[in-house]
Length: 142
Image (cartoon, rainbow, N blue to C red; front, side, top):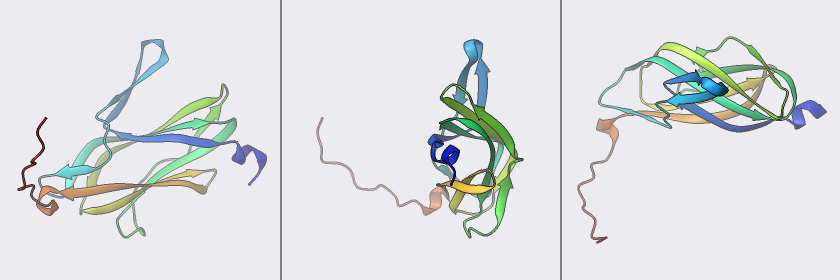
């Protein structure tokens, strides 16, 4: 790892339905989520955005891919995109369209920097049938 790589920090990763650029160069995140729970599978998403917020310096090439629960097959792969951190931080956003999650399980959201794996997050996709029913009431009184 060279000095430039050591200075690169992934501050956060967000998954959402869309990202919009607003007045004043502000970003609005629509439909932020951590997991996908649906009545039944497969589930189709018309749009999926992966937002990576970076701190550090320098120019880098970023790729995002989402792997199937078997961790072998890629569900989607972004085109490599160049970003530069000029004033301490930068956002890099990867958009995917018409994404279908065919089965339940733990999908891996991987971020590659300069063709090397930099970060990996779990995205759990499940249908409501797999969730345990919440039959038990709470005895707590507020």
